[in-house]
Length: 316
Image 1 (tube, rainbow, N blue to C red):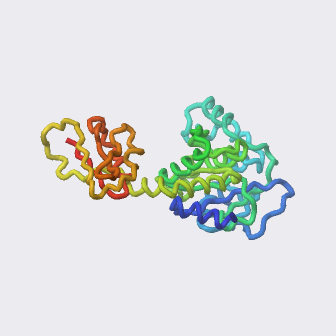
Image 2 (image 1 turned 60 degrees about the vertical axis):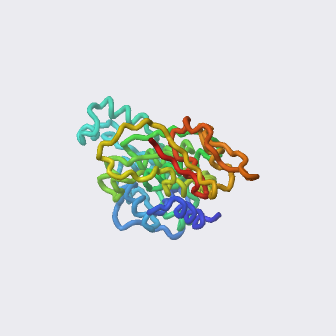
Image 3 (image 1 turned 90 degrees about the vertical axis):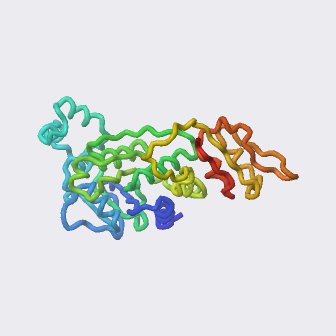
């Protein structure tokens, strides 16, 4: 799958607003890819990501990096003594003591000065280079599906390493390059203050080598799980006049099965987490029944999964 096809798959399934951004750190002497351009003014790494997600391909040597902290974290330049000391975090009132600032600095991931000579960024669909990482700007629901895709073939849960400091440089670029594991970020002071990331967006960074596997898993999730969740298929019926006091509920559930609609497919029995439902013979055909209705917890899974809409629940 080429980069354009990969970007189209990811954008379509996740319904992304912004293009995933391909990011590569160039080593000293490494050839600059074609069709990337120096911005007319210096930019922070977080700004470059927001510009790239809108369709621009950028080449950023140290002279075009406006944030000395981010440039040093990514190994483009030496870290200044003042930044290394943590003093600025106190001046900005972002941390209370030098001890806190130094601990935060010591535990973030960095590359040694001179390890890299420039950064290049492009929308994934236009990338003329193999990225180190691909950074997504997305909403929590979309982030959830990327996490599901990353767990799809292994069942593993995720342990992210992030903070509200040095987000796009340390947490999204260096951290993911070093560990080769997906990581999240909610942005940081600089990213929130100077880029166009909205209050409702977050970031996910993925090692490029894992992107194809994620896209394949998302395609499988898109066959059922994603569209069902987005259709809210387990929502109970609308209750009118909810503010009007009524008689106390006994908490029992009545299950009504339309035998004329039921085809005996067995999905309700298979999906029911409490074994409330089962198929029984009815006039030579298999039909759904609810012999253990008293165990029903009203999760609405049976109603949501029934292709014939033959099941209704009433909570009393």
